[in-house]
Image 1: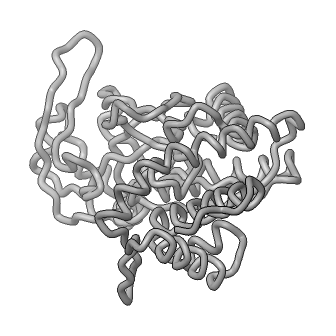
Image 2: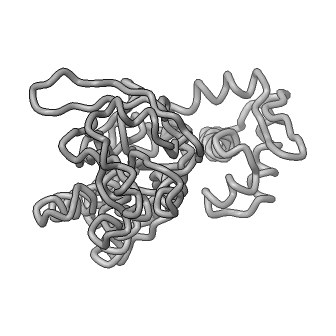
Length: 319
Protein backbone atom coordinates (compact mmCIF):
# COMPACT_ATOMS: atom_id res chain seq x y z
CA UNK A 1 0.00 0.00 0.00
CA UNK A 2 1.32 3.46 -0.89
CA UNK A 3 2.61 5.49 2.00
CA UNK A 4 0.62 8.60 2.89
CA UNK A 5 2.23 11.90 1.85
CA UNK A 6 1.29 13.71 5.06
CA UNK A 7 -0.24 13.10 8.51
CA UNK A 8 -3.62 14.41 7.41
CA UNK A 9 -3.80 11.91 4.56
CA UNK A 10 -2.74 9.06 6.86
CA UNK A 11 -5.31 10.04 9.45
CA UNK A 12 -8.03 10.12 6.79
CA UNK A 13 -7.07 6.62 5.66
CA UNK A 14 -7.15 5.20 9.17
CA UNK A 15 -10.53 6.80 9.91
CA UNK A 16 -11.86 5.44 6.63
CA UNK A 17 -10.74 1.94 7.54
CA UNK A 18 -12.39 2.21 10.96
CA UNK A 19 -15.67 3.12 9.29
CA UNK A 20 -15.31 0.24 6.85
CA UNK A 21 -14.60 -2.05 9.78
CA UNK A 22 -17.97 -1.10 11.27
CA UNK A 23 -19.66 -1.90 7.95
CA UNK A 24 -17.83 -5.22 7.71
CA UNK A 25 -18.72 -6.20 11.30
CA UNK A 26 -22.40 -5.40 10.70
CA UNK A 27 -22.43 -7.72 7.67
CA UNK A 28 -20.80 -10.54 9.65
CA UNK A 29 -23.25 -10.12 12.55
CA UNK A 30 -26.39 -9.93 10.41
CA UNK A 31 -25.32 -12.29 7.61
CA UNK A 32 -26.63 -9.89 4.98
CA UNK A 33 -25.64 -6.64 3.26
CA UNK A 34 -29.28 -5.58 3.30
CA UNK A 35 -29.71 -6.21 7.03
CA UNK A 36 -26.40 -4.50 7.77
CA UNK A 37 -27.48 -1.44 5.80
CA UNK A 38 -30.79 -1.31 7.69
CA UNK A 39 -28.97 -1.50 11.03
CA UNK A 40 -26.51 1.23 10.03
CA UNK A 41 -29.11 3.47 8.41
CA UNK A 42 -27.32 3.66 5.05
CA UNK A 43 -27.81 2.11 1.63
CA UNK A 44 -26.87 -1.45 0.75
CA UNK A 45 -24.66 -0.13 -2.08
CA UNK A 46 -22.53 1.89 0.35
CA UNK A 47 -21.99 -1.11 2.61
CA UNK A 48 -21.08 -3.37 -0.31
CA UNK A 49 -18.71 -0.83 -1.87
CA UNK A 50 -16.89 -0.06 1.37
CA UNK A 51 -16.43 -3.72 2.34
CA UNK A 52 -15.16 -4.47 -1.18
CA UNK A 53 -12.70 -1.59 -0.85
CA UNK A 54 -11.46 -3.02 2.45
CA UNK A 55 -10.84 -6.36 0.73
CA UNK A 56 -9.01 -4.68 -2.17
CA UNK A 57 -6.78 -2.61 0.10
CA UNK A 58 -5.59 -5.68 2.01
CA UNK A 59 -5.74 -8.11 -0.91
CA UNK A 60 -7.78 -10.53 1.18
CA UNK A 61 -11.23 -12.05 0.73
CA UNK A 62 -13.14 -11.37 3.95
CA UNK A 63 -16.62 -12.57 3.00
CA UNK A 64 -18.15 -15.39 0.99
CA UNK A 65 -21.41 -14.47 -0.70
CA UNK A 66 -24.08 -17.13 -1.34
CA UNK A 67 -27.65 -16.84 -2.58
CA UNK A 68 -28.97 -17.02 0.98
CA UNK A 69 -26.36 -15.59 3.31
CA UNK A 70 -23.05 -13.81 3.55
CA UNK A 71 -20.48 -15.55 5.77
CA UNK A 72 -16.97 -14.65 6.81
CA UNK A 73 -13.98 -16.47 5.35
CA UNK A 74 -11.39 -17.88 7.75
CA UNK A 75 -9.39 -14.66 7.41
CA UNK A 76 -12.53 -12.59 7.75
CA UNK A 77 -13.62 -14.39 10.91
CA UNK A 78 -10.20 -13.96 12.51
CA UNK A 79 -10.24 -10.28 11.53
CA UNK A 80 -13.75 -9.82 12.96
CA UNK A 81 -12.87 -11.49 16.28
CA UNK A 82 -9.91 -9.13 16.72
CA UNK A 83 -11.84 -6.01 15.75
CA UNK A 84 -15.26 -6.62 17.33
CA UNK A 85 -14.05 -5.70 20.87
CA UNK A 86 -12.57 -2.48 19.49
CA UNK A 87 -15.91 -1.53 17.94
CA UNK A 88 -17.74 -2.44 21.14
CA UNK A 89 -15.46 -0.19 23.18
CA UNK A 90 -15.96 2.63 20.68
CA UNK A 91 -19.74 2.23 20.89
CA UNK A 92 -19.52 2.31 24.69
CA UNK A 93 -17.45 5.48 24.59
CA UNK A 94 -19.96 7.28 22.36
CA UNK A 95 -22.89 5.94 24.40
CA UNK A 96 -21.34 7.23 27.61
CA UNK A 97 -20.89 10.61 25.96
CA UNK A 98 -24.53 10.65 24.86
CA UNK A 99 -25.60 9.61 28.33
CA UNK A 100 -24.99 13.19 29.51
CA UNK A 101 -28.45 13.97 28.16
CA UNK A 102 -29.85 11.22 30.44
CA UNK A 103 -33.10 11.00 28.44
CA UNK A 104 -33.72 7.57 26.84
CA UNK A 105 -33.92 7.83 23.07
CA UNK A 106 -33.48 5.77 19.93
CA UNK A 107 -34.76 2.36 18.90
CA UNK A 108 -34.66 -0.41 21.50
CA UNK A 109 -34.18 -3.85 19.96
CA UNK A 110 -35.43 -6.61 22.25
CA UNK A 111 -36.65 -10.18 22.20
CA UNK A 112 -39.03 -12.15 24.41
CA UNK A 113 -40.92 -15.46 24.30
CA UNK A 114 -44.15 -15.25 22.31
CA UNK A 115 -46.49 -16.07 25.22
CA UNK A 116 -44.88 -13.78 27.80
CA UNK A 117 -44.32 -11.17 25.13
CA UNK A 118 -48.04 -10.96 24.37
CA UNK A 119 -49.10 -11.13 28.02
CA UNK A 120 -46.56 -8.76 29.56
CA UNK A 121 -43.92 -7.31 27.28
CA UNK A 122 -46.25 -5.70 24.71
CA UNK A 123 -48.20 -3.80 27.41
CA UNK A 124 -44.87 -2.71 28.90
CA UNK A 125 -43.71 -1.53 25.45
CA UNK A 126 -46.83 0.61 25.17
CA UNK A 127 -46.20 2.13 28.60
CA UNK A 128 -42.52 2.64 27.76
CA UNK A 129 -43.07 4.48 24.46
CA UNK A 130 -45.74 6.62 26.11
CA UNK A 131 -43.41 7.59 28.94
CA UNK A 132 -40.41 8.10 26.65
CA UNK A 133 -41.70 9.51 23.33
CA UNK A 134 -38.16 9.78 21.93
CA UNK A 135 -37.92 5.97 21.99
CA UNK A 136 -39.06 3.37 19.50
CA UNK A 137 -39.13 -0.40 20.01
CA UNK A 138 -38.32 -3.21 17.59
CA UNK A 139 -39.42 -6.40 19.37
CA UNK A 140 -39.00 -9.96 18.17
CA UNK A 141 -41.46 -12.26 19.96
CA UNK A 142 -40.59 -15.89 19.39
CA UNK A 143 -40.26 -19.19 21.21
CA UNK A 144 -36.89 -19.52 19.44
CA UNK A 145 -34.32 -17.77 21.63
CA UNK A 146 -32.21 -15.11 19.95
CA UNK A 147 -28.62 -14.85 21.13
CA UNK A 148 -27.99 -11.48 22.78
CA UNK A 149 -24.30 -11.96 22.05
CA UNK A 150 -24.92 -11.99 18.29
CA UNK A 151 -25.55 -8.25 18.25
CA UNK A 152 -29.10 -8.37 16.87
CA UNK A 153 -30.79 -7.36 20.14
CA UNK A 154 -29.89 -5.16 23.10
CA UNK A 155 -32.16 -6.88 25.62
CA UNK A 156 -33.71 -10.31 26.01
CA UNK A 157 -36.52 -11.14 28.39
CA UNK A 158 -36.14 -14.79 29.42
CA UNK A 159 -38.79 -16.82 31.20
CA UNK A 160 -37.79 -19.97 33.05
CA UNK A 161 -34.39 -21.14 34.19
CA UNK A 162 -31.19 -19.65 32.78
CA UNK A 163 -28.75 -22.24 31.48
CA UNK A 164 -25.90 -19.97 30.33
CA UNK A 165 -23.95 -18.84 33.42
CA UNK A 166 -21.81 -16.39 31.43
CA UNK A 167 -24.66 -14.06 30.47
CA UNK A 168 -25.35 -10.83 32.31
CA UNK A 169 -28.84 -11.22 33.76
CA UNK A 170 -31.09 -9.61 36.32
CA UNK A 171 -34.15 -11.32 37.77
CA UNK A 172 -37.13 -8.98 37.60
CA UNK A 173 -39.97 -11.32 38.55
CA UNK A 174 -41.20 -14.87 39.04
CA UNK A 175 -44.01 -17.03 37.76
CA UNK A 176 -45.83 -20.14 38.92
CA UNK A 177 -46.57 -23.28 36.93
CA UNK A 178 -50.15 -24.52 37.17
CA UNK A 179 -51.75 -27.83 36.23
CA UNK A 180 -55.01 -27.00 34.44
CA UNK A 181 -57.84 -28.56 32.45
CA UNK A 182 -61.08 -27.54 30.74
CA UNK A 183 -64.03 -27.29 33.21
CA UNK A 184 -65.94 -30.18 31.65
CA UNK A 185 -63.06 -32.42 32.66
CA UNK A 186 -64.04 -32.11 36.34
CA UNK A 187 -66.13 -35.33 36.41
CA UNK A 188 -63.11 -37.28 35.11
CA UNK A 189 -60.91 -35.79 37.84
CA UNK A 190 -62.98 -36.88 40.83
CA UNK A 191 -60.63 -39.74 41.71
CA UNK A 192 -57.48 -37.70 41.11
CA UNK A 193 -55.75 -37.32 44.50
CA UNK A 194 -52.02 -37.76 43.98
CA UNK A 195 -49.71 -36.66 41.16
CA UNK A 196 -49.03 -40.31 40.38
CA UNK A 197 -52.65 -40.59 39.21
CA UNK A 198 -51.88 -38.30 36.27
CA UNK A 199 -50.26 -41.14 34.34
CA UNK A 200 -53.68 -42.52 33.40
CA UNK A 201 -54.92 -39.21 31.93
CA UNK A 202 -54.19 -37.65 28.51
CA UNK A 203 -51.71 -34.79 28.63
CA UNK A 204 -50.90 -31.98 26.19
CA UNK A 205 -47.11 -31.55 26.11
CA UNK A 206 -45.15 -28.40 25.36
CA UNK A 207 -42.35 -29.59 23.08
CA UNK A 208 -40.44 -26.34 23.65
CA UNK A 209 -39.55 -27.52 27.18
CA UNK A 210 -36.52 -29.68 27.95
CA UNK A 211 -38.62 -32.37 29.70
CA UNK A 212 -42.23 -31.84 28.61
CA UNK A 213 -43.42 -35.15 30.02
CA UNK A 214 -41.85 -35.11 33.49
CA UNK A 215 -43.03 -32.94 36.39
CA UNK A 216 -42.14 -32.65 40.08
CA UNK A 217 -44.94 -31.83 42.56
CA UNK A 218 -44.59 -30.70 46.18
CA UNK A 219 -47.03 -30.36 49.06
CA UNK A 220 -46.07 -28.97 52.46
CA UNK A 221 -43.25 -30.92 54.07
CA UNK A 222 -43.94 -34.06 52.06
CA UNK A 223 -41.26 -35.52 49.82
CA UNK A 224 -41.48 -34.07 46.27
CA UNK A 225 -42.96 -36.50 43.77
CA UNK A 226 -41.79 -36.73 40.17
CA UNK A 227 -44.23 -38.17 37.67
CA UNK A 228 -44.12 -39.01 33.98
CA UNK A 229 -47.24 -38.18 31.99
CA UNK A 230 -48.52 -39.63 28.74
CA UNK A 231 -48.82 -36.98 26.02
CA UNK A 232 -51.58 -37.41 23.45
CA UNK A 233 -50.66 -34.15 21.74
CA UNK A 234 -47.27 -32.44 21.54
CA UNK A 235 -47.10 -28.78 20.49
CA UNK A 236 -44.10 -26.47 20.29
CA UNK A 237 -45.79 -23.22 21.38
CA UNK A 238 -47.22 -22.40 24.80
CA UNK A 239 -50.26 -20.57 23.42
CA UNK A 240 -51.08 -23.56 21.25
CA UNK A 241 -50.91 -25.83 24.30
CA UNK A 242 -53.33 -23.53 26.14
CA UNK A 243 -55.80 -23.63 23.26
CA UNK A 244 -55.65 -27.43 23.06
CA UNK A 245 -56.40 -27.65 26.79
CA UNK A 246 -59.26 -25.18 26.44
CA UNK A 247 -60.70 -27.39 23.70
CA UNK A 248 -60.62 -30.38 26.04
CA UNK A 249 -57.67 -32.30 24.56
CA UNK A 250 -56.24 -33.09 28.01
CA UNK A 251 -54.43 -31.64 31.00
CA UNK A 252 -51.27 -29.58 30.88
CA UNK A 253 -48.91 -27.46 32.95
CA UNK A 254 -48.88 -23.80 31.93
CA UNK A 255 -47.40 -20.57 33.37
CA UNK A 256 -49.71 -18.44 35.51
CA UNK A 257 -49.40 -15.43 33.19
CA UNK A 258 -50.78 -17.54 30.31
CA UNK A 259 -53.82 -18.96 32.15
CA UNK A 260 -54.69 -16.21 34.66
CA UNK A 261 -57.50 -14.74 32.55
CA UNK A 262 -58.90 -18.19 31.62
CA UNK A 263 -58.95 -19.27 35.27
CA UNK A 264 -60.71 -16.05 36.29
CA UNK A 265 -63.30 -16.48 33.52
CA UNK A 266 -63.85 -20.18 34.21
CA UNK A 267 -62.50 -21.30 30.83
CA UNK A 268 -59.92 -23.40 32.67
CA UNK A 269 -59.86 -24.94 36.16
CA UNK A 270 -56.90 -25.81 38.42
CA UNK A 271 -56.09 -29.47 38.94
CA UNK A 272 -54.50 -30.77 42.17
CA UNK A 273 -54.38 -27.19 43.54
CA UNK A 274 -52.98 -28.37 46.88
CA UNK A 275 -49.84 -29.54 45.05
CA UNK A 276 -47.31 -27.04 43.70
CA UNK A 277 -44.83 -27.15 40.86
CA UNK A 278 -41.43 -25.38 40.80
CA UNK A 279 -41.61 -21.63 40.23
CA UNK A 280 -39.52 -20.02 37.53
CA UNK A 281 -37.84 -16.69 37.06
CA UNK A 282 -38.37 -13.80 34.68
CA UNK A 283 -35.00 -12.33 33.73
CA UNK A 284 -33.66 -9.39 31.80
CA UNK A 285 -30.58 -10.61 29.90
CA UNK A 286 -28.03 -8.19 28.49
CA UNK A 287 -25.09 -8.46 26.08
CA UNK A 288 -21.76 -8.79 27.89
CA UNK A 289 -20.80 -5.13 27.63
CA UNK A 290 -19.85 -2.71 30.36
CA UNK A 291 -22.29 -0.02 29.28
CA UNK A 292 -26.09 -0.29 29.12
CA UNK A 293 -27.90 2.45 27.21
CA UNK A 294 -30.48 4.54 29.03
CA UNK A 295 -33.26 3.12 26.85
CA UNK A 296 -32.41 -0.44 27.99
CA UNK A 297 -32.33 0.48 31.67
CA UNK A 298 -35.54 2.49 31.35
CA UNK A 299 -37.47 -0.33 29.70
CA UNK A 300 -36.39 -2.85 32.33
CA UNK A 301 -37.57 -0.43 35.01
CA UNK A 302 -40.97 -0.04 33.33
CA UNK A 303 -41.41 -3.80 32.99
CA UNK A 304 -40.33 -4.44 36.57
CA UNK A 305 -42.75 -1.77 37.84
CA UNK A 306 -45.62 -3.49 36.03
CA UNK A 307 -44.60 -6.91 37.34
CA UNK A 308 -44.51 -5.58 40.90
CA UNK A 309 -47.87 -3.81 40.49
CA UNK A 310 -49.52 -6.95 39.14
CA UNK A 311 -48.11 -9.08 41.95
CA UNK A 312 -49.25 -6.54 44.55
CA UNK A 313 -52.78 -6.49 43.17
CA UNK A 314 -53.00 -10.28 43.24
CA UNK A 315 -53.24 -10.44 39.46
CA UNK A 316 -50.33 -12.82 39.16
CA UNK A 317 -46.62 -12.40 38.60
CA UNK A 318 -46.77 -10.89 35.15
CA UNK A 319 -47.20 -7.31 34.02
